[in-house]
Image (cartoon, rainbow, N blue to C red; front, side, top):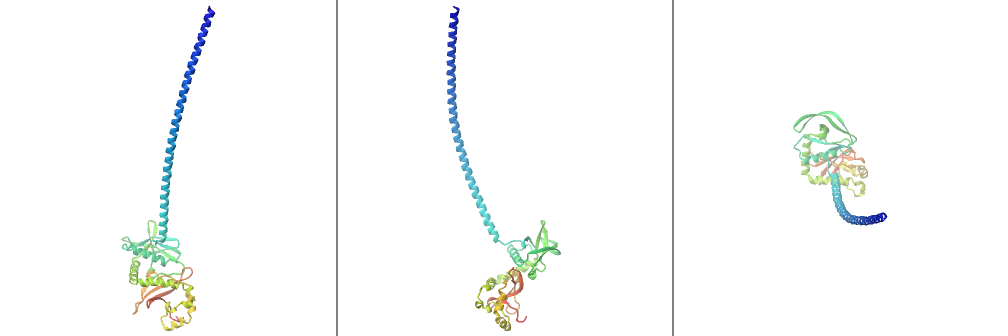
Amino acid sequence: MNNRKKLIFITFFIAALIILSSISISFINSFLMKSDKLTEKEKIQKNNDDLKRNHLDNKMLHQSQKLNMIVSEKKMNVEHSACIDNKNDSTKTSNEFTIGETSFPVAFENDLTSQELKQILINDMNHIFSHFKNYRIVDRKTNIHIEGKHLQSTKALFCYGKGKYWPDEYNNFGALILKNNTYHLVIPQILTEAYERSMALKQKHQLQYKALDDFISKVNTLSKMNSNEIELDKLFDFNNAKSKKFYLNHPDHLLSQLSKYRIRKPALLDYHIKSGENKQLVAVTYFLDNNEIPIFETALIFKNNMWKIMLPDYGT
């Protein structure tokens, strides 16, 4: 009897275990299926998120590329504009006095000097001293009047080199004043006034000034012309019959000497009206060698409606 009870107990126990196992397996399968479904949903969500993220990244990349293109285009425009400005700058006249590789700012004694006249004066000044490449600063006292103050300059600019030449108005030129730790070249009142007179003369004889530019260009190309094509009477002012006869009898010598040099354009201060009855316009200038150095002085005169080179009298 006891054995039978044990067998029945064991049978019920095993059956219970089987039922519990089935329930557990079913529960586990259900959990796993649910888990798989959740994972699949998460994958779908993740894929959707990834798609959205990629779309956003592509959109941002597109915007970034567009922005870069705009920035690059603006940069190119700025650089192009800078190139144009630099190109224009290269044609602009300087507002400083240049000697060799050094430039000096200028300070005008006359505060009322117009900007136009200032620029004209500086341009002419640079033209006059363009052949000088060296300078030194020397001790020299000069009384000056700058910005309403009476001062004394203790330093002066001295240019030196071959072909020393400048108009008389520049004889006491070169006073320096220290402003903001930089030497400024003083433009004296007397020099400004001289240029005012020179500009008035130019205004009165505009056609003659323009004609002189053309005449100098012609003379400077004589070496390329056939001597038979050159009319000496239209190039030279012989002053008297004796000189004319002498020079016309030696045209080759005269032209060969002339072809070795170039005529320098006169400075504005080099024009004046010749004294006498005719009141002719005269310009003093220099012949230049191959190095653009003034070699010897010459004078040009506007006579009989044309410019001519004044030749010294025969025998002088």
